[in-house]
Image 1 (cartoon, helix red, strand yellow):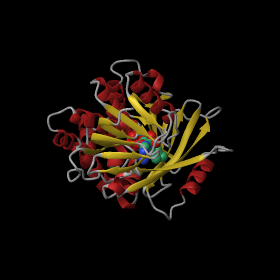
Image 2 (cartoon, rainbow, N blue to C red):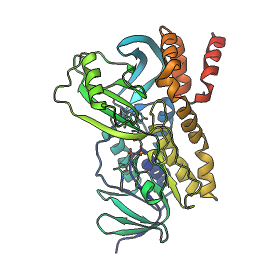
Image 3 (spheres, rainbow, N blue to C red):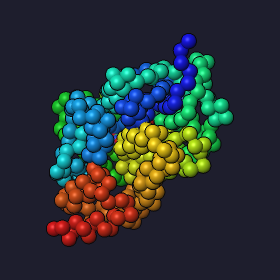
Length: 372
Ligand SMILES: Cc1cc2nc3c(=O)[nH]c(=O)nc-3n(C[C@H](O)[C@H](O)[C@H](O)COP(=O)(O)OP(=O)(O)OC[C@H]3O[C@@H](n4cnc5c(N)ncnc54)[C@H](O)[C@@H]3O)c2cc1C
């Protein structure tokens, strides 16, 4: 008979689930990951990996080379007001890009290589919090001591735990063959959405063109993406568009959840409400959950660990309007023109690393001036 009890069950084998699983696997912990997909599987994501995320990935791989995980690097950031170039900034440290299909599969491979167990192609259909059991779509039932939800922005936890899933964003993107194109920088476009932004990122043999922002059912995301592609003179030809939700300014309160339940990554609402960067807090919350489980007081340890993430989400939510619409946004765009060095400083201190928080936006400019 196969085993049906695990100390830790993780629903979802994406970056959040694998952040936890790889960390627990280092301690030979009793873990079972369940994912409804079979890896490699597709995931809509622009794949930008900042310095802080890269450091977490390096930690997961324990010093083993991670070069093969990345499809390219970029060391220039360009900001646009629609298609008008505002700034072109050189980064001291290049950022990296991943193809999520390959990246997520590589994390799962590494976990398996360490002897980790993952049930692929099995959907978690129901959770019984009284008996600490999960029912899989094929009828199998497994029990747990700890259950980690790492099942993405539309996590089943929201229904089964009646948690609130506010402030979702929607993003849509297309991967266009890069042959003959000259997109080697991180290009960010304002003015296409008044609650988000558009982007073109290099991805080796393709470029990722996308738009994303606060979910608004009256916005024609597909039409906006098509408009951007036309404005840039690109030919999307037969290329497919794919869209997905991501959290954008609401971290699910976890203090009232049962003590043995933790929400990770998108399921917990952990994505940056301005940049949309989710990989950092997904992998990070996975690592925190794994460290909490092997601590003396898992619940308290996890709640303490995620405090900084909650601050990023709350402060970023308050800053959304200034970044994307309204008079402050217009003023910022006008003032930004030609400020190449400042944007490089800003990117390094607020995007690549979280050295300044969203409540320090004014301070970052004065610090930059003082530094000069
Ligand atoms: C358009 C777009 C662009 C983005 N670009 C970036 C970017 O450039 N950089 C960045 O850092 N972030 C980006 N993000 C955000 C990033 O993709 C997410 O934050 C990240 O994928 C979250 O990881 P996760 O592990 O929490 O969830 P996911 O990656 O969504 O993984 C969840 C896993 O759970 C599985 N699952 C779901 N339900 C069940 C179930 N019931 N039973 C079993 N398994 C289940 C799924 O199959 C999946 O494998 C982007 C998001 C979007 C939508």
